Length: 156
Picture 1 (cartoon, rainbow, N blue to C red):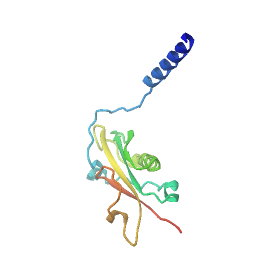
Picture 2: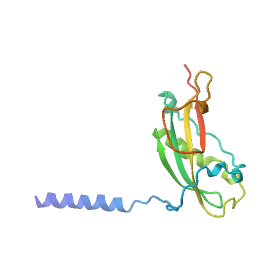
Picture 3: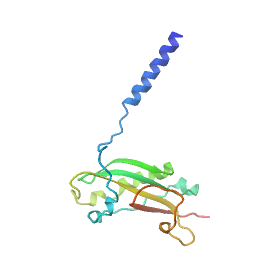
Picture 4: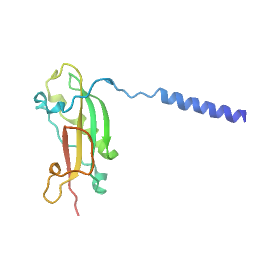
C-alpha cells in the first residue's frame, strides 16, 4: 500500500508542477479592450480580408462565429491573440489565422504610440435566397462591434 501511495503522490506532484510551469505568453494582460479600434480612420490603410470558411464547416453545413482579441503594437506586430468566444473550433482557428495575415507590415509604424487591445468578430454564414449574411439575423452570437463576414457557398 505504501509503494502505491508513493507512486500516486509522485504522479500528482509531476502533474501539478507540470501545470504550474505552463506559460500563456500573454505580454499585455491588463491592457483594456478598445471597442472597434480598427473602425478608426487611422487604420483605414490596413488591408483586411475575411477569414477562409473552414472546409469542415462547409462539409457539415455549419454557420457560426468567432471573436478574437489581440494587441497591436506601435511597430504593427500582433500579440496576445485570444479567442473570446466561438461556436466551433474550426471558426476559432480561421479567425486567429486571418488576423495575423492581414497586411500589418504595409502600415506605417507608430499609428499608435502604445500597444492597443481590440477585438474582431468573424461571422461565418451562407448567403440565403438572395440575402447577404450581413442582413440576416444569425442564430448564433459572439461579442464585438468590428464584424467581418466570411461567406460560404454550398454546392449541391
